[in-house]
Amino acid sequence: MLFLRNFGVGKWSKICLGSILFITISLLIGGCWDQRELQERLFVLAVAIDKADEGGDTKEEKEKKSIENFVQPHGNKLYRLSYQILQLTPASGSGEGARKASISTYVISSTGESMFEMLRDMLGQVSKGFWFEHLQAIVISEAAARQGGLQPLIDLFRRDTEMRWLIKLLITSGEAKKLLEYKPPDGEPGGIFLSDSLHLYKKNPHVPGWIPGLGETSQAIDNKKTVQISRVELVEDIVKIGGTALFKEGKFVGYIDEYATKGTAFFSAAEKSAIITIECPDHPGKILAFELFRHETKLTVHVNGEDIYYTLDIGMKGNLGESQCGNQYDTMDEEAIHKVELLVAEEVKHNILYAFHMYQELQVDPGDFGTKLRAYQPLAWERVKEHWDEAAFPNVSLFPSVNVTIENIGSHK
Image (tube, rainbow, N blue to C red; front, side, top):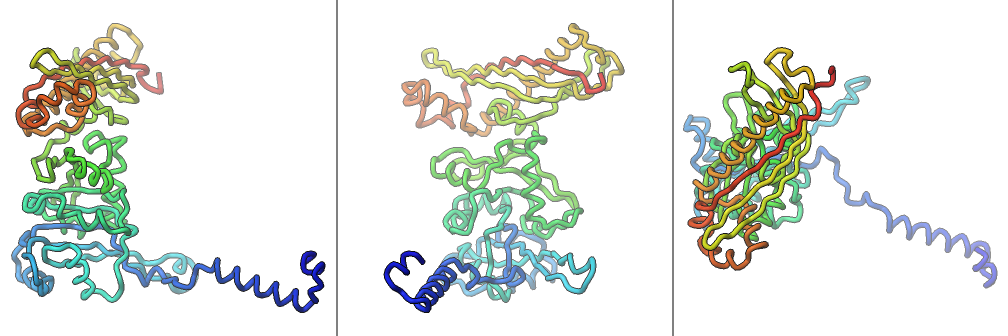
């Protein structure tokens, strides 16, 4: 205003200029011109990809499959793409009911080959557009993965700007769509349930400790590395996540079980917490449980002429979490505790070698061993890199050394 007064601008001119400035700023910062209410959006929470002919053959299911078909100018009816959609109903009434909105989900599907084409075709089954910003999980059936490989199934999701890199990937030996139709006992949407279950990896060593998502999977595909995806199974009304599916060069190779998944986390230093059980040395049939709090892992590659082998040094610290052997281990008797430490160390070594040999049988390097050889022994790597997975890796040796320290035996002692 002082600036305007110095130049002789009148009172009304100042008001007009101030009004114009205010209106201009309001237009620039206004962000509601394109708003759309939540209930006007169809949020996709989870995606299922099945082989087109998967599922039952009841009359109702055949009728549903006929509706899923559309005129497809190119390609074949290879896959069934299904979406779990979040349906929001606004709260109504007064009092307590006014503060609660109704939340439910439903599943729609389409059959084809192009994921993008099926996506657009499903717009014929709804009245609003799809939004993928809150997509939580993509569940792939084993049959679909075996049929076309991994890359064609997730290519759309890797390219679309609405997709987040943290979307979780899972694989099932059954029909993936059924996992979208599953109703969790706590009432939360199934897509959120699956995603949140994977976040419990810090306490559950039976799922991969690195939570592979869409971003990490994309990077592994681009770099031609082994892709590891969490396995999920639905049996009647029970969902269980555990074990890992392996992909090499985009092709499905097989599964490693929960015990091997746990061993993988040990030699990859990906384990945040774990329960390691052993048989009580003085009471056969009784169990002792060691609770892992932290560990340090060092993998070293050695080359001796034509031979390649690895040493793995692990230091573990934790507590005695459970004893079914009575009160024998309730005191810090050094000799008794040391005996337990040695047994836990032997169990960890057995677990690691079990996982390592399973990878060798499948001819799949989980990534740690070839990377270490390439980084520290480049000449040896050049010699074997062309046939590493198929010939060299299955014949290398691993020598683990584990040191376990029990720091505490229980909060009541």
